[in-house]
Image (cartoon, rainbow over all chains, first blue to last red; front, side, top):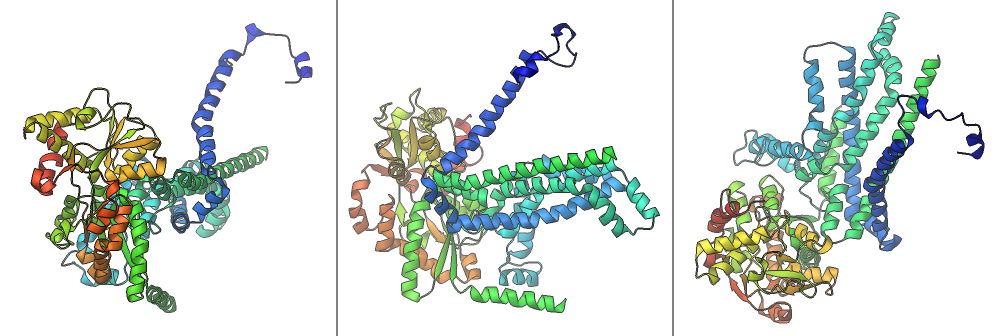
Length: 308
Length: 330
């Protein structure tokens, strides 16, 4: 505070303190605790990640990231996210649209099911796929047993060497599963709050369903959707548990970035592990930045609407 | 639509036609990372010189039991190189992708290299740990992985058990008491050998690490010989990490010949030399003589002689409700 501001401060009115504010000591204590906690559990580890990553110099850092296995892990992670995020985006919009704009039987069941990936441990999500697609699972017993039920299908899969579990498709499936609720969860409350009056107006004025969707609904949910996509992407790239179960950890083939970090750490290559980890930390920072920007845009938009 | 399908189909064919190089997947256990990095390079060179073909070998590492389970569930390993025979037996019985008598197909029980269990202590040996008796003393903190998931931990457990049997004139109850005291001193059970080593060496937990001999030597190499020292107990177990091809998988991949050669070459002078260099006890006399300085001589019992083979040992000690479950309370 500037000295001028102190001079013109209103006379002390300690006795008439606003009932909802706390004494300054309490406020400072609370803020101090919150900031201290943040510093200890968020900032410090982040600083540690970066100092460790560059512990052996910048050359080693780029050598680690340029390594064929690391590069493969990065490509695989990007691929999994590039498939999972758009799919979940489409699903999320469909689900939110159906839930917020229409009434139908089983709506609550659908809502609960969308939350399922949030409530089960990622390891379980991975195991589900092993149980379904694994060699001893349902699909495996149909495909790879000595006398498969659909020999033509088994032959075709074998001929083209198509695998699901312990291969890229399994990793993509597991990623889709764990990131499934992000977009839908973000959009449902937003669309419910907006109600259906604007869509109804559009229909009355003669717009088709498709036109209503693109010209009325999408502009309204744009920022919420973007927010959901950002969160979904962050999780897709950072997922460890579910992917770890279905990956088989074949180096240079089925290791994603988080799994590659684990492998490097277990190779006693601690600096290398932190170098790759710093990529994920960068991603987190970018996500945070984007998230703040979207929130800011969203708030600005709301203000304009209110002032209108 | 038809043209699209056509394009897809030609693309698929093009991909399979380009993939002329031979691919092998070796699913292995935790501490063999460095060994196979070196061996794979040597074998690739050997195979190229012999046949002109390029062979690309991929690796997957993890706790031995866990890796076996992945193979059972469909991880398409051409060869498995695990910590103990029981884990390959599990693949044979559960997935039936290799014959039950797989262990008779290669020399030395299909184990091209051997190892044993030793102690790794901090420099100067502050707790004066000399033998198994010292690690069951009160106040000694012992790091070893979980025998349920780790192969090395099962060898460790059996080595301790064999020592107790030897000392107590084959009295089972006394041996059990000894093991119980030992696991009371264990603060963390990691799932694999590598996890335990990191716990002990990097995170500084515990007074003694019960480790694979090769892993203990590797720690000295990686972390510096000025920080740790190896203590060899008076008695330990001859650990034989076996290897095998997975018959049905290699047949389907068409890699039978190269997979067999890959394992055979482990027994060659070059393979044995690489094993010795990575602190595994080589089987060939030449390599054994060359690296003799690395390996202390001690009394080694065998799994077949002392415990009646892996199937029996697994059932008595590590199956659900077995001795380990009875003596270990977390």
